[in-house]
Length: 141
Image (cartoon, rainbow, N blue to C red; front, side, top):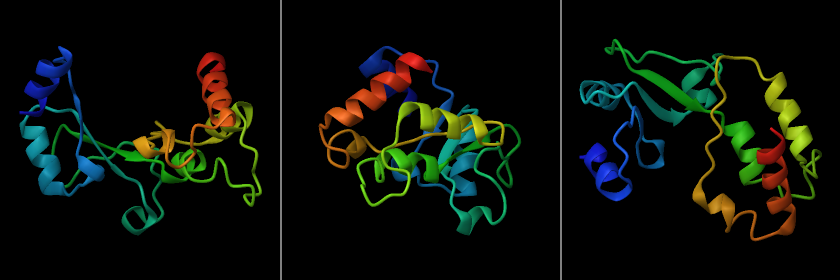
């Protein structure tokens, strides 16, 4: 159904990574998604689940064989989504160069930056600083 909706709406059929609403996840969901032919599934990368592990690696869910779990790096995501405009934040102002440096220095196989849609309006607001940050980051890196 998910693949069919993407095809109907966007004309795109090569979806291999699944994102559930609010990144809802458990191993049963992952196995079901694997059985549907997906190769990956996104979920949250929080310490209470990971313990000492990093969200910047691919993991295989218990009971699955082929599908990989892609974890959202919530710290780097929240730097954009919640702290970008926070003048109290010691790293304010966040520049494209500073953020790119953090990404470069982050260890792992993959970094999933996964902001909510509200980041681009409600949280950061239609502020020129965020537009400049986004454009500079996308054009430069």
